[in-house]
Image (cartoon, rainbow, N blue to C red; front, side):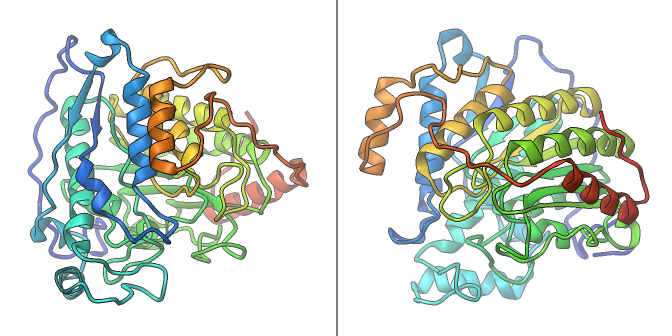
Length: 405
């Protein structure tokens, strides 16, 4: 990273252009989904699958009435990102390695054991990157949200894969924006810390990174502590909020309400990027947090509102982690509706029968009948004293005060 503005060395410069006037009769949001995103596939035994995200898109589409359909713009075909685009963030030597593995079908890991290569892995990952780039460009130009559920691969580093992430679509899209001089607020609610994004922009004064996640002492990737608060021009702009296993809405929401608005109001971003992982949902098999659909809905509404207040409506929302199909599909489908300015389904509303049939065919077991979640949330030891202790540490590291709302 260059020390002055956080632009990656050699980054492709994106010409600035004045914002285009919004057509009030135009779409309220963009959804990016190409069926080819499913080619990002580590095999049937691997926990990560884009099939969950496709089920979310299908449920979102099934939930739309005729009037609502007219409000949504779609990108349904995406080519892989060019090598020049990928080099904005990733190192050439690593890109060549991924390309070689993808072309040869070698049975090798792209990292230390979580992210196997597979035939076509380069193009599959590069296509997801291009989806994020196109979504970011669209929301900048049109000043309304874009939703890219296949994206959110936040662990990949410039020189290596990590945590099921071959390439980092978020970091490439943010790098393009930063190289054009834009200020980006990155929010991450995945159960796993978004280390690839945070370290990729650790010294950048143009990226505010706020990351809520399970404590790295108990979960991969083992990072994301309050003392990791940025360096150089980015000092005080990397905000890590680790939560203990078992924490749920009672921990997440008070902290989100207390931290996010004042941090964004102080930073004054020109765009918000939200990594919307669903692996912090109660019942996820790879993490131990217990968020509910109500928490995700409040966060979604808050972020949409802040994007309108602070960023002229510029908001990019991606998917992320999530390893339980019924949770990922329903949460991200509701997110798509909220981001698009549509009414969210009620907790007891029935999901469409046609979608339940699609779910059974894809997942091999019965779909849930309602939008509500049925898992029992276990009691938690989290209390006000825990919140105050974490807030005090963040205040010390960031040099600011966070009053209770």
